[in-house]
Amino acid sequence: MRSLRRRVFAGLALGFVIVLGLALAGDIRQVGSHLQRFAWPLTPVILSGTLFNYSLRFVKWHFYVRLLGATNLPPRESARVFVAGFPLALTPGKVGEALKALWLHQRTGLPVARGLPIVAAERVSDGLAVLILSSVGVLTYPRYWPAFAALVVLLIGVVLAFQARRPALAVLTWLERFRPIARFGSGLREVYEGGYQLFRPLPTLAAISLGTVAWLGEGLAFYLILLGLGLPPDGNLLVSAVFILAFSTAVGGASTLPGGLGAADATITGMLTLLVGLPVSTAAAATLLIRFATLWFGVALGLAVWAVSPDLLGLTREDKASGDRDLSPEEDRS
Image 1: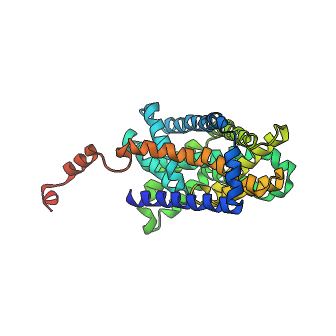
Image 2: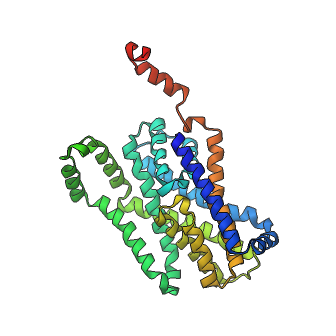
Image 3: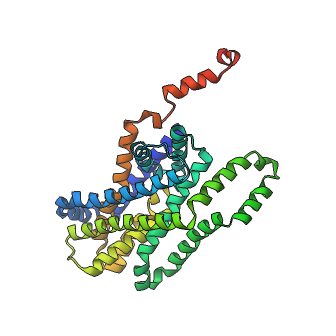
């Protein structure tokens, strides 16, 4: 946990560097001027779009949890685990989110290995959802087609790999013949079985549908940010806002950088200048605002849950007592 906390705080430090870099790239005085003139009364509505996104993604998360058989997890406790996972997105490749599988195990008894695929299923379904939202923009701007196609092939490949049951089981059997891997055989099979259940056609379609509507909420929030910076209301601007946010989210996820930091930010700023024709200073201000309204707002919510949930950050007293009882008298004295 100490190592994980260090990585999260390292992600926070990197985020500060990215914010500073964006401000400097857009001329910090001009960016500050745009932020000063921003229509701040829109903030509650903008954050409502983000909360709408989080709410639907929680429905998807809880659906996945129950699909794997953890029906004894109350929705409130499930929501606490879900929100507590937001800061873990700041770890490289978001690998820290695997901790949610451990939290599920502690609360439901679901094997950690079987719960791990939930993290992958969330990422894949979110990725396909934002790519669906990007499709109209890709048709309008063909220059983004190669990256779009590569991401689609990658994500669908993950789904198909879990659904190709006979080849997958054959590969697992073959891997178990090697001694260094054999001891992980049961765990790998648990991971596969969990993934097989989550990536079945109907659950996958349901998750992608929820994700598409959820991410549309943040696309609308981004549109409001552009209006708050003084851009006139326009249907084309709305389509561009949804496309830019969705596509940059996919790029940030594919980059494996903590929270997509740098990759998503640069993509948003670059696309705003190329597609919408905004000056760099205005594009940088818009990027800062949407990243604070989405990524950093979520991280703040997650850290707030951490602050009131010490059991998520280490052993509880009950866990420690259970561990002490498991020791033999000789081990206890040592």
